[in-house]
Length: 335
Image 1 (cartoon, rainbow, N blue to C red):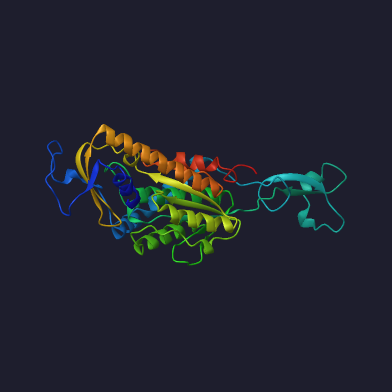
Image 2: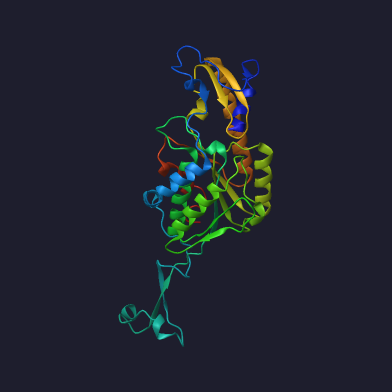
């Protein structure tokens, strides 16, 4: 939200900082509270409690979304360890009897071994942005950005675990990544995300690049409202470790268009900045231009780190984001 407010303050001549405290709204706003944005902010502790109370349903939803995305094992087009049949080969001298496929061998005079297709896992790290700007929505009918990021991260992990990938969950304090494996992997991931949310600071804090395994893929679930230098430094450090970073940009629809009219006071979620606007078509046009430049800048930084960003609006089905991720090289398609 700090970056979003910087968009507004850059509309020179049309904005001015608002004084602290509340002022009477102009006619047509329908009450004092309606003149203040952001609406519906939620504390980190309250959101953590809410997610914890709904955890079983969220995990079920994540698995359903992953199944709808249609991901399966990640084959490597060669013989090796895996579940899918690859080929039969003649048994060699000294071959263990347990390796022989006796049904196939009974069809002729030679013994055959059944080989499976190799499924070498990729190492994929997942990180969720817990900054205050994520705990906001423009309408009560929409999920909080943090809630959608939480669900997308779980669904993505479920999809990748089905593919047989090596999944790690990144923290922000330099702790080693949490390796996710086994039947309870999603549950462990969800509890770790909730614990991180309870301990979070309001300001955005990127993960420590030193904790990223070399030659891995990093999936960042956040709103992209980061100081440019901070994001650029992280991506540069991750690239130095030969990691490919993909930002899944979770966006509230109101952030793309500034759909407000009349005098509106915008209050930052990560500092005490306030901006008073007199909404107009010209203001919305200028805001749209600044938002477009921000998206272009994000795309440039992310492409330099090896992958374009994947934008996702919170009023859209989460499956769309997973399908967009699957379309990226190395994310569910055959290499």
